[in-house]
Amino acid sequence: MLQKVEGPECPGCGCQQSELVGTSTRKLLQGQQVISRETVERRQCAFCDRRFYVTTAERPANVVFVAAVRCPHCQSTDTKVTSTRGNERFHRCHTCQQPFKSIER
Ligand SMILES: [Zn+2]
Ligand SMILES: [Zn+2]
Image (tube, rainbow, N blue to C red):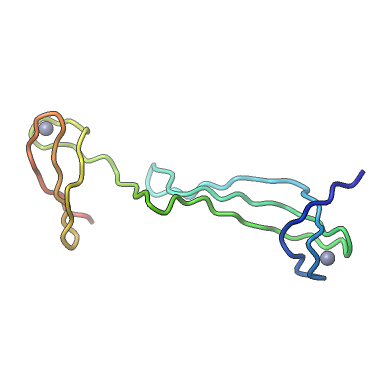
């Protein structure tokens, strides 16, 4: 039996009855870090048989991924950004409690 789902509009006929044919996940990388994941759904319209893709980005809005910064005093990576000014970042090391600065390239 054909599974019909209330879903995104078909670009061919505008109906919302389409069948999910398959999904794939795409990772967006920034350096070695995954900054976002995209889910691509392949759908087929139940009425006009048109195949189309729906992309859902999974991007936590309040999370900023920063590459691990090493404390220049004790080499610990357990650091926290306390403030930023322009392309300068001010950090504090959790291990030795020393503040330090990094510059974003
Ligand atoms: Zn359609
Ligand atoms: Zn430290």
